[in-house]
Image (cartoon, rainbow, N blue to C red):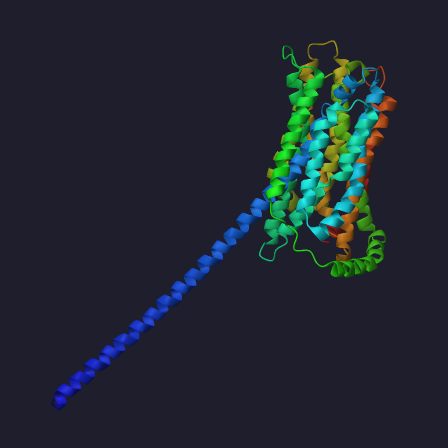
Length: 496
């Protein structure tokens, strides 16, 4: 081999080596790109898996909350007729007082159970207590129509309130599943906003459906007695609650693995040391104290108004009622639930972003006072046109306007109020504020029906207008909340 051939061979070797090096470099780049793509795909799959699991958990918890609302509210729409059927010698005043007592005692007992179940679930987990609560609600709902004494009905409702705390446990579970570093706060806010809208609609819809089912079964030619209609309706409601219990049985535990007993005791001691300091920060902070009292008055007024609506719609015209059947009462509550859901899902958020929480609450309170005035107009018109063919068309036009005001009022005031109370000046007192707020809500729902049951009993008599003073008392309780809100500054509430 001469020198010229040796040089050619060397050049070829060099070019081959250069080509191989470039190929290896390109292969490494392709491999890096492939690995990066795989990592991105894995991250995307992980994110999709997280959100999928989150939405399943949230949907399950909302369903269980809804069925618990069904167990309580389905009975409320036909409660006056039920009491009159069970105790035919009862006067309208006694029906009002007994209705308030049966509804209110449930929340008195639940106020106690909330603290007990909350503490136990923090240590042992939420799931089994939710299952137990729904089981109790199912049994109490099914056996309700078989009680033959007012005091047995009161005792049964007290037992259900004391031995079940589904809604509060589900709220705690919602906090568990949405408190994640990877979940943006904006999505968390949207989730809770729609959850409030759904549960609000379910609360009214359950009341409406209970009355509609009983009303349909009592139509002429059905052949179903009143007692049987109550049994069938309560059985259907109990069956719905049973479905919720099955969902609870198969759901995953939302509470993180509980700590040891020793560590739990240490945490409790540390919390107890901060209790007095947190209470002082609430009681000496005028804004926090005012907000909690506003929440109490709002819950009292809303619980009382729901009961008063049922009593007035089903009361005889000569006693100041509208003389309607449970079927028509159910239709009114369905309209109410629909209006609340529409307002919450369409206009509430834009209005809230534009004018702020406090202004939204004030507007809602004005509408709530307006709805009470509208109810007084309905009662007056119904009595004035009692012998006229125009009575029903006029009354139903007013009722549709009334439910629209209820939708705006309840959404604006109650939901904005809940969002306001969820913030506080003192970060160290947030947990205490939530606990006090929960007690204020439950106590309000207990005091409202009991108090207005007795007020209704005081005023109802042989007069077409006798129930108007009861509605005026509702105006006063809603007005107290509005007056309290006027003592607050919007920049303090909205920018806490």
